[in-house]
Length: 294
Image (spheres, rainbow, N blue to C red):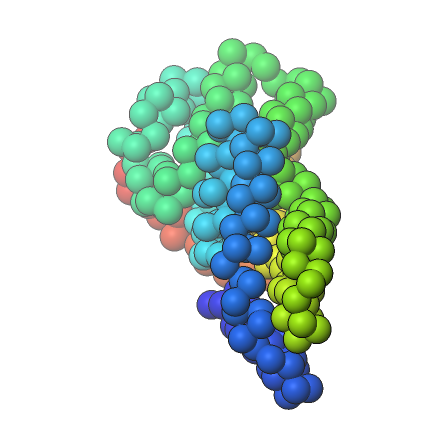
């Protein structure tokens, strides 16, 4: 929604100011199709050459992610903390025997199934299950565990950033590609040097549309989308840090509820539940755990 409003403001102010200053929009509209074809064709072609098929495919999905915004809401962080409480409590009470059935089939587990939105994030669920499973085979050194989890998060984050980096490189190249299109327009104009001044003026104006489009697309369209995608990727990585904090704190023999509170402080301030909200959610989770066998 905000992206759409932003693009309307950009286009409205740019072209509105041009018209208000006496500019002739027909010159721009006449040159727009072929200039846009040259610029976008060169940009997309270069993008395909410079990146693997996987990165190219992720970049298309990344543009959609930039429009949708971050996936995680305040209720999701509360649910994540509550789920971690249930998992760690079950681990503490039942040990490896009690927790392993839940880790093997999360979609069928009574500890995971109350949180369908979390289950949709397969990377996060696998991350949690893998490291809790490691702890069942005596991988309990908090320092080793934390280092392994941080390396895993960094790897996943690096892979997620690949399409964003590709889009940023495309952004940096668009002004130069616009100049290429403008130079072609100038070449075309020089081939018609015997034409009247009015015709040559229109042709030069059309050629400059290429430079205009390159800069506009770079700094007002593709660049902001690349920046928004970076923001979304950063936001969507926060739950991994929350889960890591809870698991590492538990490995340090911190009481489960304190471990979850430590993890709560790692949640983004805008989405983190308050102490009272989390306490109420954990009280409800305790009642469910006491009523339902692990």
